[in-house]
Length: 161
Picture (tube, rainbow, N blue to C red):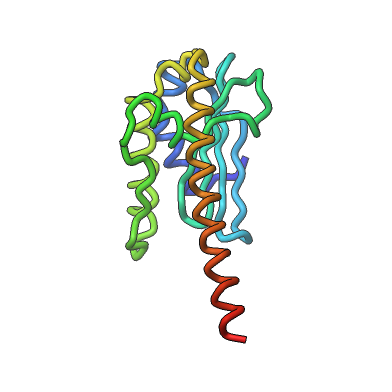
């Protein structure tokens, strides 16, 4: 397993997964040639968690091991089910101290998951239909925004020719 700052911070701040919920780290990867992207996977008997570093931003997906990973939930959607309106991802504006910026993200996400996602950590996915509805609304809103931008772009392009 590759050792890197992100993996070490994730294992440190998410230690409660191992200590309190029976998770273990099943995969670590680090891609220094790909903007330093990295990932750490945790699994219990029922639940999988994937903590990813993508271009300096920490992201989390969580789901039932009985489902393919593509069906897992984005942490944002899970938190919106349990605590509507709570801000989940807050990306640092200042990366001058990369370690501080990264640790800030990882520690915040670990606290949010512990405080707002306990049923899933215990393997209870009885609310998956409702979380999928939250996901659908989020994705529909995002696609609507992309379509609007695309229409504006095309409209501007046709008037400038």
